[in-house]
Length: 420
View 1 (cartoon, one colour):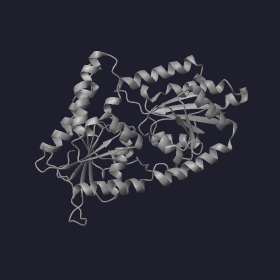
View 2 (cartoon, rainbow, N blue to C red):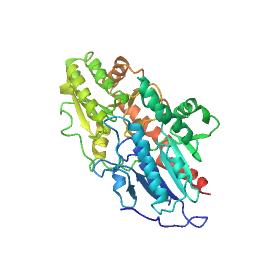
View 3 (cartoon, helix red, strand yellow):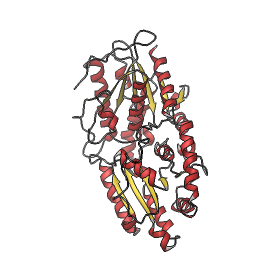
View 4 (cartoon, rainbow, N blue to C red):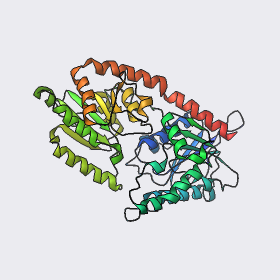
């Protein structure tokens, strides 16, 4: 159902700020988690909030988006996401342009600020509004760096898209990034925007899901063998850039140096977002299953696709460490989730984990090799007390640096400043 107006509430200048979020696909992922948390945060501050998107599947989404008090408006899902498996970026751009065009010209919606992320090409359309609205763009990472250009045809196809990304990003009234690492990459990538200010707003952790008493949460029964004494967890979408194969290779390397008794108690769960509509998810899941077979790990690896929030929390509480394998990840909320659950993190020594994980205190930062990861895993197997020590330190680090309260306060300040 399309909502034509947002209720007006009072704040010091006469009415509350009305915010619309524009996001391409409201599925399950780090970017989606941030958008939902941002919407919830602003709502907790009294803002009127709607989320507009080109796709929202009630069976494949975060539970907060099913709350009638947080309206989600889906338009343009009839537009293709690809053309015969190609042109994904172009289709994403067209879908977001359609969402923005519908918002501006057909919705009749009154709003003050638009929060958009991932796809900046919708910003010029938002500028066409009769009464110019302020636009906040949240840059998770430059889109042009998330795809490879192995052929001349791909380079030719991406050239105008990359140009549009840079030009339209610069049209936002305010630009936020998710880490100091991304801020540096932003300046290196968008050279014409060097004079544009970018503020860092770290993603927060909405701890409501994680704070449920263990008695009310699901357990890991049926997910891992009963004999498991050391459980490791990989938690990422089934995408090749997440380097999930490294977790399997690290497990194989670890098993090769353990005693038979220790080896029998070690298990790995590979869990993450999975969408049947996304060809890469389907293909990479099959690739990982095949790799596990080649490494003779079938009996000590469990693959989970799109686990529920309660299952994810149960795994984080039970595991001895999270293996976070992406290289040069712009931020990554998984290490923060793990640390809040008192779980050590073994991550690649690059990108966002350099800012979220304290090496040697809340986990280990390693080179992206099976040997380096397996050595960190072996320490946790050999020294059981490390899990408790690092877990307590991780929980405190999240509470100090990545609390929802701090995130909400900072984001609300940006939104109010834009609306004045």
